[in-house]
Image 1 (spheres, rainbow, N blue to C red):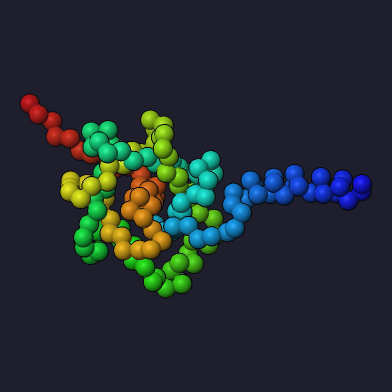
Image 2 (cartoon, helix red, strand yellow):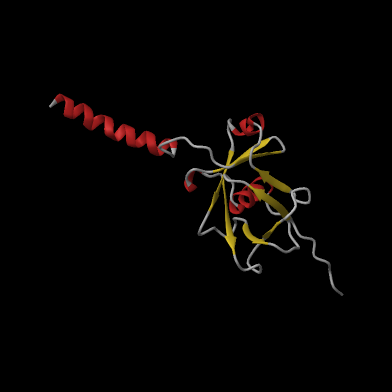
Length: 153
């Protein structure tokens, strides 16, 4: 009977630890460093400091991200087989970004396309980063750019 009581008290603690940590097995998630700040995809959406959403309608977007065919021409490039020293830059405290299916009106809404004009351009040749991850990280790190609209008289 005593064993059952101990087991009954340990199970809720294990469940609480699992939810506090956010994941059962620690795995690497896409992470970048921009201007001395690490930005990483959140393991769970509720843990994120910032949320971003994606849209297929360019009229709804407040950030446009162009997928580039050339790493040199892109604002942000992700290529596999990065040195471990650079990958280790995200081991500390990172700003967490989550991709939201239902973003709030204040969250950046990203339109991802092959054509410009765009606020950012990305190049991704990776097994661990998707195009959505890369776009979410660069927008999460830099935010939305204010477009200058010319006044027409």
